[in-house]
Amino acid sequence: MNRSVRLRSPACLGWLIGLLSVPLVCSLARPAPVRAQSPPLHDPARRPVELGSADPALERAILRSVPGYRPQLVGEDPARWARYARAAADLNGDGSDEVLVYLMGSIFCGTGGCSLQIYRSSAEGYVLVSDLPTSRLPVVVADSGSNGWKDLWILKSGGGMPATYVRLVFNGEAYGEGERIAAAQGQPPGSALFSPTPSFQDGLPLPPSR
Image (cartoon, rainbow, N blue to C red; front, side, top):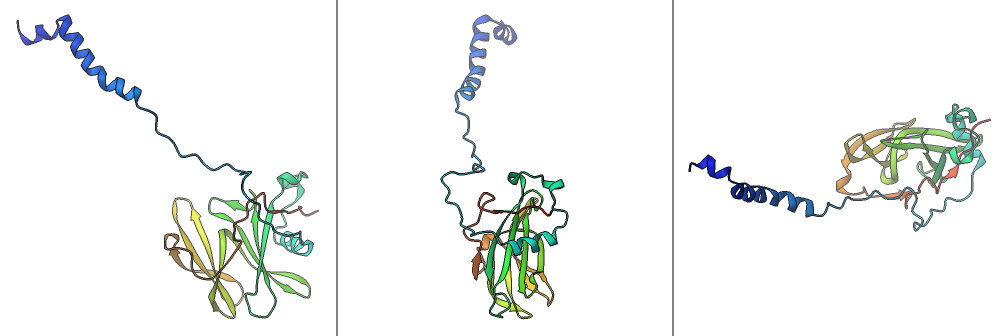
């Protein structure tokens, strides 16, 4: 009997089918890999970050910088309003704190982060110094400075690019971006603001302009 005839015999075919089915049975019996779960949007166990009470004068300054932020855009329900966190530091050495505002919500945030604003105090109220559209927290106040103002470090990431710390340098009128270092090298030295990082739930509601 030739080789082809022997392979067609029922006994040989049964043996061959059994042999081929072993990997399939093993693969079906192998447990499915465990996938990492994303953290919940709201963690009840997380301790909230205390941000103090609202500052109406600061809110008026914020609204002047975003005139399109109105009820027609965000509605009347406070649950849909943007929120903000604030921190204070004397950036220009005049003895008065500047105020840094981190705006949170879909209108102010994108894949690269959220808007960071810097205000100085004046007799007329808060004056906008810089408006940085994409930033992540914390903000680090460096020991170095430029044109009388402290340098700042902000974290940037998103869009498939590796996370980097960007130095903000004051050019005499506003802050602009300077050198970059990989976030993998660690947080730059200095005083960290917005640490611990506030969540959207921690933020103070920002009522729209009327």
